[in-house]
Length: 415
Image 1 (tube, rainbow, N blue to C red):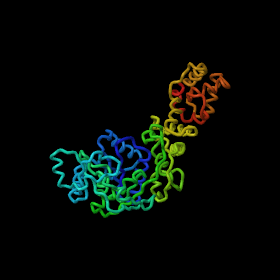
Image 2: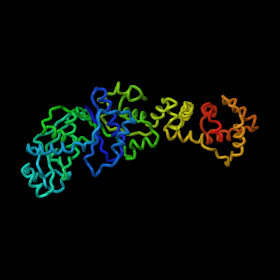
Image 3: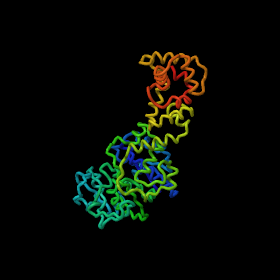
Image 4: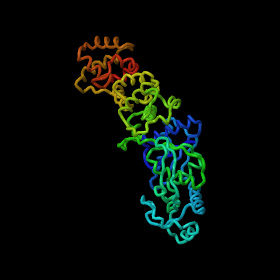
C-alpha cells in the first residue's frame, strides 16, 4: 500500500506532483493500492477548495486512486490513540508554555499522566499531550540515505495532541499510515526529520510491520511560482510534465515517453541520490515533443476546434512554439478579423475581395497563381499583404505549408 498525502495549505508544487507520480507508479508495479490522504489537521492553514483542486490535478495526470480520505475524518480515532498512550504511560500531559517551540523540551511535566488529565479538564487548564522520549537511538533504513539514526534527544518528547485536542501532523500521519497498512513511504527529503518521530510512535503502539522509506533528494527550484497550476497556465500539458518529472535525475531508456510506458521500466533505486534542478527549458523541449505526438483532432480542441486540419496546422507552428499558449498566439491571429488600416491594408482589401469571389482552390500554387492574376499585384506588394491576410502577422512558416489546413476556412481567414 502506498499513499500520496498532500496538505491543502497552498498550490501543489511540482515536487509534490513528482512524489504523487512515483507513488502511483510503484503501486502499479507492485499491484497494491494507491490511496490519497488529504492531511488537513492544521485547520488554520487549510485553504478551502485546495483538496478538490488536488484531486482534479491527479485526474488530469491520469493517477487513479483506490480510495481518498481527509485526515480530519479520523480525529476521534487520533484522540483515542493519544489517550491510549497516556494511559499506558508512554505519553504525558504538559502545561508548559510554548508547546510548539522547536527548542528541546525541558522535561518539566513528564511525570504528569492520565491521573492529572481529568483535573486539568475540570480546571480548564490548557494542556497538550507529549510522547515520551525514546530510551535508545531510532534506526531505520532509507533508500537514498542508507541507514539513518536519531538520538533520543533528537527525537525528544514531541507534542502529539494540541491544546485544542487536534493531533499534530506527524502523529496523525503515523497513525493513519498504520491504520492503512502503508508499506512504502515515498516523499521529499525535507521530511527526514519527521521519520524517526513517526517510527517512535509506531514502536510505542507495538506496530511490527516494517515500513520502507524513500526520501527523494531535493528538487532545486528557488521560484515558488513553479506550481502545477502555473505550468498549466503557461500551456504545458500533463503528459509532458510527467515525462519531465520521471526523467529528472533518472537514466531512462528513451527521451520521450508516456507514463504507462514508464511503469514498465521505472526503477526507484536508479534515481540520482543528489539534488536535481528544475529546468524550464528542458520541460519546454519535452512539451513540444509531446504536442507533436498528439492526435490532430484532440490537439485542435485545445484551440476550440474539432478538426484534424487545425491540429496539423498547429504542428506546422511547433517549429517555433513549445507550449499551448505559444501555439495559440500563432493560430488565433489567423482566424481573427484582419486590420485593413495598416501599411498593407489597401492591398489586403484587394486580395480579400478576390478571395471572396474565387472558387474553392485545393493547392497553394493554384491559389497563389489565381490571386496574382486577378489582383495584378506582384512582388512585395503581393506577398506581404497576402501573408498578413492569411496569418495576421508578417512572418512565420511558408504559406504553402499553412494553406492546406486553412483552405476550408478561407472566407473567415480573409475577412
